[in-house]
Image 1 (tube, rainbow, N blue to C red):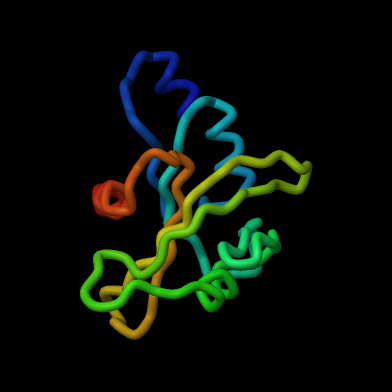
Image 2 (cartoon, one colour; image 1 turned 180 degrees about the vertical axis):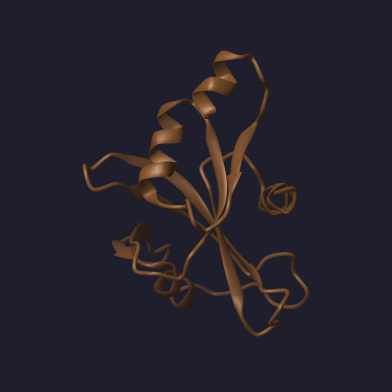
Length: 133
């Protein structure tokens, strides 16, 4: 569908989708089409390569592990945490991405996570764009 939209000359900045389609294969395939994506991601076992800012060590972790290993923003911040990661598919293809953690509006003690493949967007722009979905 994205290829058809590009071929038809329909302008767009990125593709928005929910957790159902947010997997490394989809993100890497879209990036290969020179298209960025913003998506909510599940709290599942999908691993992302994250580099510890203190030690500089890279590790393959899921979103829950990344969240637990990082210091969160305090107060009424728009988002709790933002980290750069590498998304890798089963064939070893890699792309850079940003994970943005925000409070869950349904349960303020919980959080949701978004992934964005456009490294130039701010956390605020990522969250505002996703609300358009």
